[in-house]
Image 1 (spheres, rainbow, N blue to C red):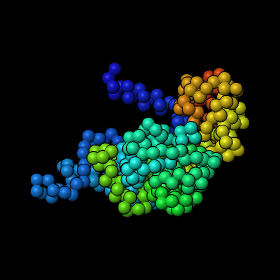
Image 2 (cartoon, rainbow, N blue to C red):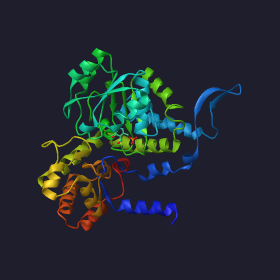
Image 3 (cartoon, helix red, strand yellow):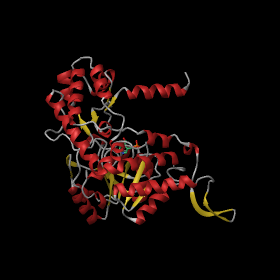
Image 4 (cartoon, rainbow, N blue to C red):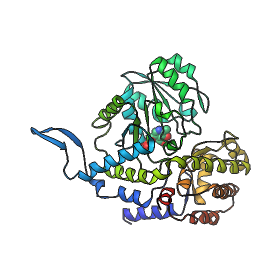
Length: 396
Ligand SMILES: Cc1ncc(COP(=O)(O)O)c(C=O)c1O
């Protein structure tokens, strides 16, 4: 079997599955087409400097449309996310984090970020980014899932406070954090990797006041794998750019940027409602699972994001399994989730599934956990989809 046949097998397999992975979304045909275009093997680097005594605009030839696509992605991103400055070059959310930290934390500085035990991103924790960049890491304490302990920030006096998490269910008390940050002259960063697709419909109030907002373009946002950075500060935007090229990365993969531009283009007509539809689907799915015996954490609201968290104790008590075992049972029935107990609704919502469908999905999950074979039930749910994303439907 040649590698492309394996790719085709993968594509066929995933087409038959219902994807509830919180870190993933679905790419429309046009977004994929851009990703596999000729640009996938091309370079472009706007330089505007001298080479052999001659003024050079782009280091590489043949890049006229690549330059245009970067401009197009930038203006679409500014329009959708309402920030003055954007950088679409980071090749992942993690790379966006690296460039943003380098642009905002002084050498040997101190950062505060949510601890992985509280759902924070492992990258901000020792031995990862803080050790790589020689920074001091202090956990950003949460009083509850929505409330950061601002008194502790005042006491620790960090250079940078990073909000955002891998297990993110609710918005934070960002305004209070920003007020304290102003008092102690700290910068506030929001890692929106998980909730990027929910920001344009208002998931997090006061987001525009952060010094930097960045994240992945492929979790709740339905774009290709990659990163993006926003700011309303010109000086910070310049520092980000300086810290990207030849520091954390070299070329920026224009096929990915072309694909992101197309995803932004398709997302724009539904940008103000997508997050609300996602949150509604998450709530209904959580409620139905909870009522069906699979307890979901943080009732009665459960979540306002694209993910819900399964209560591991109840999973063990009521169904006798752990989250990785649940993942295997569901996958055997055509439902894909990760192995840490998160269930996500971004992809099904982007495909246009509604609260009514969530009830059927919850029914299938509970039945599978009880040991029933629900392959046919899942196949019916998968086949309900008409092949068009919400963005494509809004365009017609
Ligand atoms: C909160 C958070 N930040 C950053 C990242 C890294 O994103 P990427 O996979 O795009 O590098 C992740 C990945 O899961 C994440 O959850």
